[in-house]
Amino acid sequence: MGLAVGDATGAPYEGLFADMIFRMGPARSLVETPSKETRHYTDDTQMAIGVAETLIECGEINETVLCAAFAKNYDPARGYGQGARRVIEAMIAGEDWRELAATLFPGGSLGNGAAMRVAPVGLMFCDDLDQVAAQAELSASPTHIHPLAVDGARILAIAVAIAMRESPFVRADFFGELKNWAKTEEFQWQLSVAAQLRPSDTVSGFGNSLEAHRSVVTAISCFAGSPDCYAEVICRAIGQGNDTDTLAAMAGAISGARLGIEAIPTNLIESLEDSAKGRTYISELADKLHKAYESRRDQTGPN
Image (tube, rainbow, N blue to C red; front, side, top):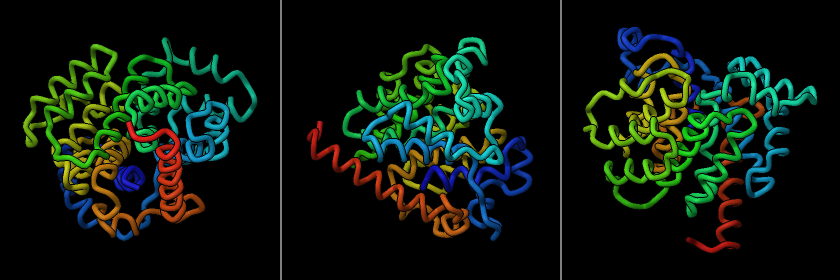
């Protein structure tokens, strides 16, 4: 729910410059006193729903089931990127989507599409970070094979899992652990820098665009600046401008994992669309995912 609310709240401002959003709001007022219009989520939430549905059905990421979920849920009006549209439409048409995903961009897409949808993996396997990392990679592979895109998904999922711990938030420890899981020099460097920032320091240097290495650490840093306040987290994410829906979705997912449903402002939840797979379905999906997590924990035991 933290992901979906962040996504839907940030979506109306996607593509706007940060200073333009500041003049409109600033972002704090956009979150604290939003319009009463229904907010619709984007492809970020729609694909995260597919990940959660797969985990509930299979207990892990199964590529065939995951791709079927992506295809079944696909609604191009949700704002899918060009690459994702082509890959999912190839899945629907029974074409060689693997080849397309590998060749559509040189080296594969390095976008944040795998990271934006990966939060359910962090929830499901939060007791086993090795599994979080492995399952995050599997969840990325249908659409993203570039090392930066995969690393972004891995790190975001790990951040969600770490946020689940019932312990005080220590910024240096949080980012230090994330750095240990990063496999690319770009993310290792960014996470090292993020660890040294104060909560009030700007995070704009990490980027605000759709590339994984220009958004994932930004979203994580928005969370780290206000680890105990969901509204502050998505305010800051939206205030970065540009890819506001995905920044708020990723940051909101981590915050929701740490703080729970009670921390998400009621007015934001109530403004989220209640379509066939809207807020009621998402709430029910969260309960089913938790039951799947408990079943797995009972079978494997805590690590």
